[in-house]
Image 1 (cartoon, rainbow, N blue to C red):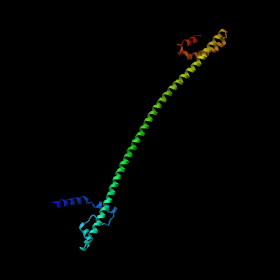
Image 2: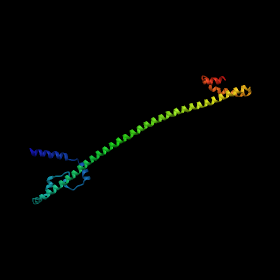
Image 3: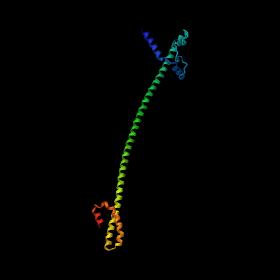
Image 4: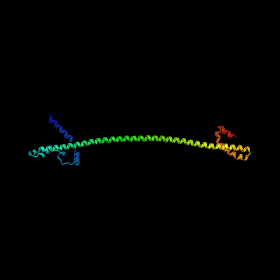
Length: 203
């Protein structure tokens, strides 16, 4: 019963280890070897017969076994080295992934900062634009006020001059000045509701 189980295990193992001709050819090209143990068509019986062609050669069986054990140890060492290397690769990959994730988080942080600054800048531009508009309105109002004050100064001075000329009966000068005063007075038609303007107009 035990021998049957072992036989089944060996058959299953051979089925798993059976490689396609293409794969076997690729392996031989990448790792060329003259060792019979590396051959795809390795035959254990033929290999043993090669090691011990005669009964007398069995006297060296201990030496051969030791060499094979040494070879097995070396293969085990190589396998461990490869496995550890793969483990290190996995650790390096995880570390690289963590660093990439950190870099992405930092990048998102910088993008958020830029977006926040852009929104603040946009708000500042809106406020500056509003202030400029207010200043522009104030400038227009100030210009209008200065022009109106100048006209008012001209109107008050003209009326005073007209009254003085009228008292002195300088009617020729009054006629020349009156037209100018009337032209200035036209600017104040919309201000006639102000008592002082109305009084100047009546004078």
